[in-house]
Length: 246
Image 1: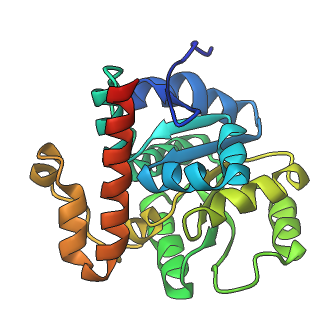
Image 2: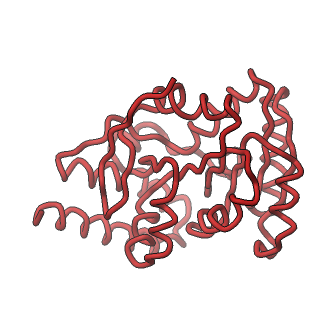
Image 3: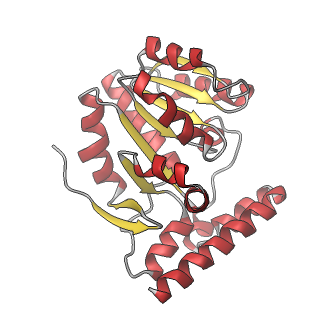
């Protein structure tokens, strides 16, 4: 059983407006049970920034089955538009909930991307925490992703879940380019959440999240992201000013 979803349109992209519980129960879990191919985008400010300057990328995001509000910038932009999201749907929580469902249902998972040691650690963590989830295969991202053999390997592995961790933009582009070769599977670009799964990065403490300062915590953890963070803040302000003009 599925339920009709409400959306918030930001930068010509329809982003679903629901709770993570309802999203999983009424949309993702049924699709997994039906072995239905799915393309999920866990969108943040970087997603909208790239879509704003790259029409082809925007069309890829628009083609997804679901685009969900994963980033605090998107949550803030919707609030200023007076179309607030019910709940932020965090990438890491989605991953864990899907793996828990896979654990109960005996489903399989494929991990593509990340540095070689992160990919390996993520696989080991999944095997330890979710022993009934079959690892159908895994491949780090330090190779040419234009290689058609990767998609062929995934097709042969026949996984239920396909988690893809590449640089922002690349993961969605890879899915769009290859998903038609792989008729079954739930494709999700998980980005840096693979590092959380591998215990290579700490989660943002709840008190920072409550203050909407997750971006600042991440900046303290990795000061080299300063330029990237400032770009996101600038784009966030652009969204606010645009909503006030509208």
